[in-house]
Image (cartoon, rainbow, N blue to C red):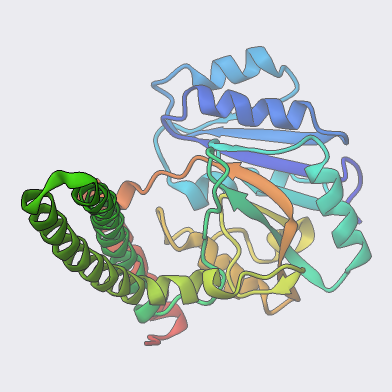
Length: 317
């Protein structure tokens, strides 16, 4: 049997900077002891040394080069002696009692293999991460959602112009009643027509945006966001708690994924041993950077990982 510490955790560094220090501080402040491992995938940077200065108890595991997210996490596999293991991105922060609460919940539900929390952006808004099994349609939905967000921004700007035109029209009508004459009346009519056209355009844009975002909302359960613990098929790799003996039995992440889909792959594999559960009352803050939407290299890596994932688990529309 695995013995104390009850909880271990791993953070993989890659150009992480000060964000990693904040994540480490969260583990230092935790209400229960956490055995922290920090895998350094960027040996040319001083972040790991700064982590060691901040937390002398953290176990630093240096890599000679960037070996990827999954392999980085696997580097600690044979060192774990915990009951539960937390996989945590360096851009995540959380309340001190979260590791304790998650472990207690898994103690009370021995059929759960992986526990996944609710995620928020730094501004406090909801971060809609995948919950269902990835499919071609859902992954295309991510790209469509980005387009939908841009269309929605246009819709909101158009609606704002329509509202301004309506205010001007009302003012012109009032001026006409006060003796402003025919000029004010014509101006009010022009503004009223402009407001009508802008409102219709805003409605069309909003409908288009919603259509573009539909698949992504379905993938992330954004349209039916659970309010109670719910079984899911995808636990985000930015922060998850897994039973250590299951993580060891699975041999960690599939090393064939350098980046992207290693968490969806692990989630589907874990379902052979028990449940993957999303718990909306357990929260993290995640500074999410969509690298693949800004970098050609990251996009190609994402595409390659996607092909590997569907080749392994079957192509599903």
